[in-house]
Length: 344
Image (cartoon, rainbow, N blue to C red; front, side, top):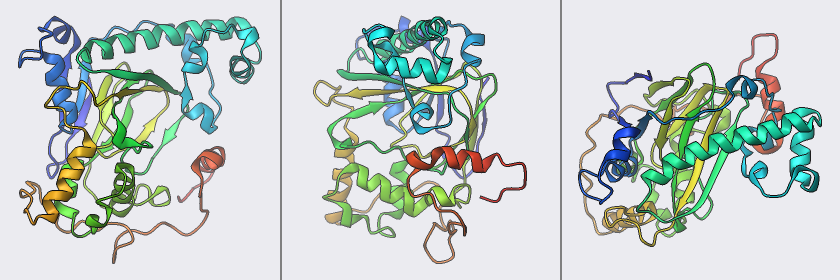
């Protein structure tokens, strides 16, 4: 059972659905169609728990695989093992076989089978939910290295105005995956639009706005764990599945070891009329502010929360700087597990 430690000063944005009930509901786009209701919650800045999705695989075998703490395996693209080419003709598969299984081809083939089984179950669930959407990409990333205390952030995709995305997470570990979340994007923009001078980003790509808001309100990697915002804490139990748009719900992994996540790309053409792309929502916000329209009052008191690099807000600590997380990831992890008190 997922445990939510809800902060009283943040909207409760957690909801849950039974996948069996979703499948039984009429697939007609009506109010009784739980597929559309679930996606309305997703678009509406909710974190959706999805119950009763059946995913069968050899848990002991998967748990026994040690993924190296390098960026390529931190966000392991499972499509690399789903390709049609056999192991002996595919140099990428051969590298995976070497790095994960010391060239044991039998264990590699077992891994490939298990990846395909898990991915098929996850895609089956999402494809059921997204019957009325046009999906152009169905990538699944296996994140089977230990993660400790990320910075609070929004997800940022290149060329984010051109498509919508759906991210589902499945905890494959035997311990909970611990997350923090805070106020949704719409409330943060309503409250901080002027303070962050966001009108200067009116003609900038969506990903630029998300980056600026992330860094200005929450800080960067060097100031992680020092954010001043109140946060919910969620413990996603082994086997839990949740769907959340990381572009609109700021989130932070506090601890986790084995999870998979999807990157489903939705084309704008053919989406239900109520599903307004996030880029268009932001463009409308800029237009309304330029026209002098006053935003609706934010229902939660955000006064007094200082943000990084502003006045007395939290600053990154003195010490080692990591300018490129992809290049420095192995070093960062090693620094965090030294046999002494480590101040980060």
